[in-house]
Image 1 (cartoon, each protein chain N blue to C red):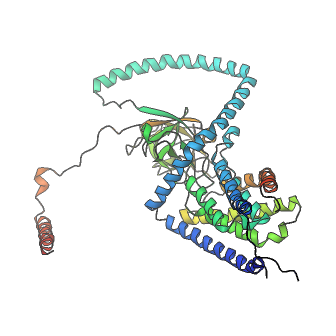
Image 2 (spheres, rainbow over the protein chains, first blue to last red):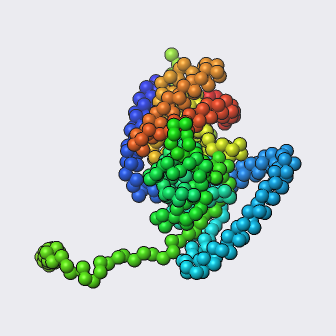
Image 3 (cartoon, each protein chain N blue to C red):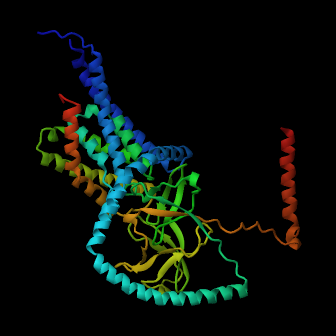
Length: 309
Length: 177
């Protein structure tokens, strides 16, 4: 008898069994992943580190093609573009005069008030080497890693504005959470009125403005910049402009182009100085007598139990 | 009745068998990697197609025994690890789509290419829905539906391109199948 023939039904059965087992395993992983365990993070980091150099090399021709196409596009509109730039240049010259005057005046005021100035920010430039990572996440890999000084939490900008922030770093690559991602929350300020809000991504192209105290004071077209609250990002990085959707909620059209990310900068901003823990004033320190004695009793109890062991 | 001798594979046959089990998986792995290349950015779009999903569907119809469930699981898991999404999501969805395709295999196996393509469209649609539901449950909120529509739509649109390459590979590297 042919052994291959007898094994056929058995093989089909084992195929089906392993299919059921694997589906169950995947579902179990999905449930376990809710807990955000350390093991998963390590596994993800390892795979990312392995893939990053490959992606880096493979994305070079892609980037070159993109630049070539962009260049040909530019050639087609070179005259119109020139015309437009000339007009813009004239307008900007006037602005420059104004800015210089204001800069001088500001420096004088700052000197008079002895304002604490923000330290200048160092940055590392890198290239985006991966795509967004599927329909439910908006993250990219950048070829700037821990070896170049990238750290979790650092802001990432492109030529036009804020892109996102670093959420994980390996030695040679980091993962950047884009502003549009579901999990992205960035404290921002809306410029002329300086109202504070939180820019919250929801996987659509335009992130929402949340926790806006007075939405009436904000109009479409207002500039959105980072507020620097929390000390993670420097204040005043350009983010985008306020737009209003047809449903009436306020969202932000970003200056950075998520679909054409190429070179980006990782800002190595350090919040100037740590705030020390605030101790209560001397006079209040030993005021609440019963609490202090209870704490002392607790201390004694634990001390005695420690002796007992 | 002819009595067959017990089958003892020659070294060449053994090597052939290794190639047969490795090639579909390796091709799918390359396709996962290809998904993460920022190709869409050339055209100013951040939509990425799921190339590996096409390979899974293709082998599930053509030769499911060459791409066992374990391989599908591994492909999905690597996709999950490379993307920053929930771990196990695409492993689950790909296995689900694989199971669905294997059970409907006999409608598709000798059908013309258009039916093969439409079948993929149906499987991709269902898989997209399952993925969206699972991700929404994971994140505890109804997610935006447009990214998954784009993702699956792009994949279905690029199906013939990848399917042709896979057919070539099957004809060249895995003859007699």
